[in-house]
Image 1 (cartoon, helix red, strand yellow):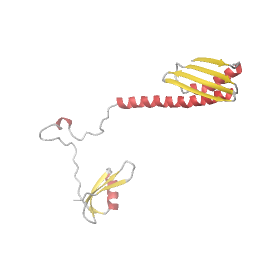
Image 2 (cartoon, rainbow, N blue to C red):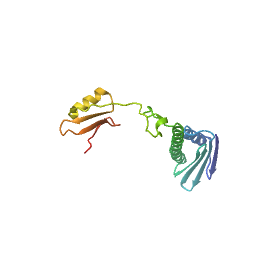
Image 3 (cartoon, rainbow, N blue to C red):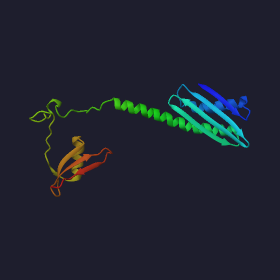
Image 4 (cartoon, rainbow, N blue to C red):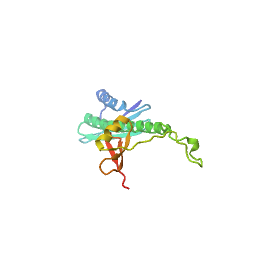
Length: 182
């Protein structure tokens, strides 16, 4: 870490340097090396200005503030820089996650069709086949049967109306009902 102080029209004593370094430690915990810091302190009539420039591995952070007190100006500028550093660190983490996610190809957990027969003239080979016996029942009975079978869906014939319906479990753990009109 390289830390430079620049003072214009003001006296920069050792306690002020220590205070500035102590405040800057709050920002440094969010940044990775190499870090270059330039803190410019300026006094104009009744205004005290703290201008902070931080160059780090992922970019540049700039913050400035002016108040009547130099310590308060430093504190406010460091707070602004801290917010920017948090945002910069979050962006870097998100970027890494996106790259990691894109590098892993998606794979289906179960193959349903034989991949070598998909382009065949006679049609694809079906690996798994289930037969459902349609029973006439109420919606409440179908919910109970679906839980007994252990599938995410259940096909049944409605007791009232006689339509074929499909009861299915949604991603948010609620149930959905498909009732096609013929």
